[in-house]
Length: 132
Image (cartoon, rainbow, N blue to C red):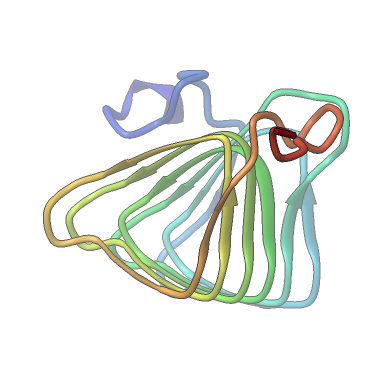
C-alpha cells in the first residue's frame, strides 16, 4: 500500500507511517521503511544492520538526530543527520544541522544550514585522508 508512492526511496518499500497531524515525542527506532507525514520531537534511527529507508514528506518535521541508510527528504529536519548510503533532498527539503553522508542528491530549492561531511561508507570503517 505505502510502497507505491514515487518517493518511497531506493528500497521501494514503506513498512510504517507516522501520519499527518500526529506528533511523537521521544526516540523512534525502525527497520525497513518509515514514512513521516507528521512531527517527531526526538531522534529517528534505523535498527543497525539492516537496509533502511526514511521518507520525510513536505508536511513533516523532525526535531532531533536522524541516522538511516537511505533518506528521501522533502520536509524539515532540525538536528544532525547521518546517512550511510544515499540522501535525496527534494525541492522543499530543509536541514538545519550537520549532514554526514556517502552520496547526496539535491534538487533546486533544497536547503542545508550546516556542514556537509562526506564519508566513503559510514557502515564500514571511517575513511581516512590520503597521505602524501
